[in-house]
Image 1 (cartoon, rainbow, N blue to C red):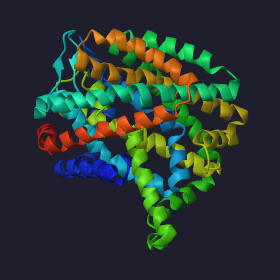
Image 2: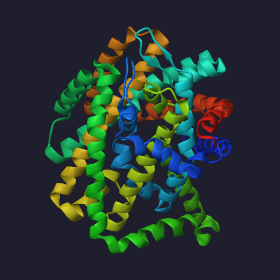
Image 3: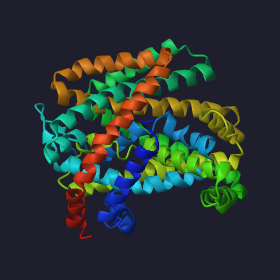
Image 4: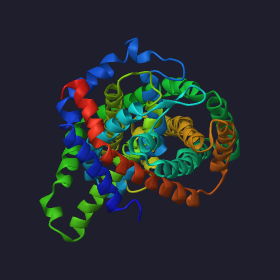
Length: 434
């Protein structure tokens, strides 16, 4: 009920409002934000960090780590196709393009209203601009409670469970063993704070993303004759007049649109207010510049990764009416044989681990906002314990509760984005003379 049409309309509507007020900056100034981000990714400036802050490239890697979980990279596109048809991929892309401005404005506001906490680290994100930008302190507290719940569920136990099931199915490894290894690794990294999290993410995400894309292109190149028909299927289903006429087929279009938009939101988290927490710690004096890094994040996460996965599945002829992981295994197995299944398993585990360490920072900052900096040590212990529980437990209830908390997080954040839309877009126009 919560993840139904009204909330998805709210996500899309907020993104459209911000797009209109910015003059569709993500489209009209694509060269600007590309130059600001990818164009400077090897520059000294984007790699500078200071006391209590991380570099812009580290912020990007850490934010991508938090959202590039099993459901995004390996299972996301497969789930779309299975649930909503190939046209859901098209609506996912539309959702992502609109969501780029939500991510952009979240980062702008996160930088604008951030402040140093008692440890000298930057405290920023949705709950900070709710309090300091709008004066809604109680709303900020509610957001943080939901954030902590979501961090232990959808950012922790569900990811750990995916890794444990994958390793058990592929190698027969006991979930308890997986749980101990994952919990120890997560605890070692999270105890080092944001700098250690960002450093680990910077090593994992670029390398694993490049490997995944190269492996996907190997499948696409082998089946290059099927590429035009795959794109044709996505577009034709999205705008099929026959399907839109009504009845069961019309319901199929509606279902595809809903799943496409939902998966776009799920994959990049634009509008949830979570990624701005990490971006607020970036070394920068320009809110608008950090906003551009938010646009790039959505572009890489959804427009690139999810699309590549979807096309890989479609051209390979893998079955898309079942589990997304099995579909991906079949797709890569068509080129790499048994090694394809192993690659999918390893991908699930590595991206799940990246999500675990990324989301740990979100939940920790939420709890610190509520209870103070001393709560960080307790949170790190609880978070590591939750990783082990996630590996060995039946998580049906956890999925429901964390999914609910994740959705409810969006409500105060979307309200805040709408109310502060003028400030955010004004900052963008002032910097880039839009």
